[in-house]
Amino acid sequence: DPVVPENYYSEEEMEAVETHIREHFGPFSNVFHELVSPDIHVDICVVPPSEERDYCTLVTMGMGARKMAVPGELAEYHLERAEVAVALPPDWRLDAEAMEDERWYWPVRLLKVLARLPIENDTWLGWGHTLGKESPFAETTDLCGAILISPQDAEEGAEVCTLPGGEEVNFYQVIPLYQDELDFKQRRGAEELLVRMEDVSFIVDPDRPSAMDGEEEDEEDGGWVLDNGAWHLESIREKKLPVDELCAYNHMAIYLRWCMERDLMSLEFLERCWDTVEEFNADPAGTDLRPFVRDCLGGQLFSALFDEEGEAFARYYYDPRSEGGPSFPADIDGYARQYFGAERYGSDEFRDEAYLFIPFDEDYYQAMAKVIQRRWDGWEQ
Image (tube, rainbow, N blue to C red; front, side):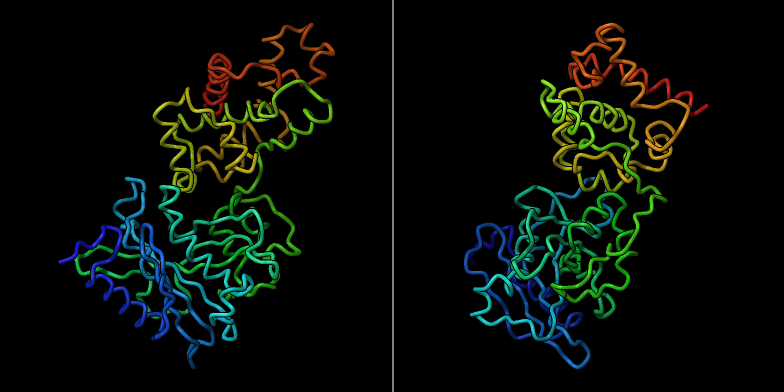
């Protein structure tokens, strides 16, 4: 018998997944077969509109053949395997000619990208996870990202397919997002975003209004920004300071490291940034978190990064809106004065931005870690 590659479903597994799709998403006869499969073989089942469902559903079949790199502490939830689905309007073109045109093809491409993202990035996808793109999916839409949620308008039990060997394949609905919706999710989390999107259909609409349109950004329930590298970059650029722009994130990386070392991070942060967390845990002093803050956190520290205790401490110590009491930015500034001496600190050399000139090294971190710990002890008391 031919050897079936590890990243392919067996015949029995494929039959179970196909049956699951038919029973929970609808019957289908059309399948977009993948011609080249370098790792996993991802076909896309095309479930046509019906009397019950006035939309077309595309569902991957093959993504779940390969287990994803789910963090060990989540093993009990059996999240290692997944397939994804997207709902399209009934008149969405899926013929061969249309598949050559990105304005029709992009939802198919999105499913293919999602299917291989866990392989290419050695990561995993699950409920509430998002994918962002630097530009819109096509010229005909401003949608540029997606969030995974539970299957919508599907038969009961659609969320999980049990394979013959007992392993589970999780099914997720793909909801395309605008950039402002992605930004909101990053700050506030998936659940709050979905509350905002309550009136948004799960069926793709390239021209739908953003769920953020007309919404004032309230900052209750943990959605506030502690710090933004853009504020410090502006000083570097406007004053033409002779420092690397990465220095804008020095103090932010120090605070983040201190919180990570003390397990004050939210579960969502640990799930989404697991690669960085693992690297950090292996070598905290050797992991430069500044590029991570800049590139992966959008240059910001925001309260949703922290668990309940971490957020409460940040509100006490790092909330830019608070008045009186200890302040992390003030403590950073105080350390700069101590490091350079009062005379040099106030000289024209630093143009009121001495904190940006402090060498980013272990001595700087250890000195500030003692200060933060002292503030923490006072806060706890």
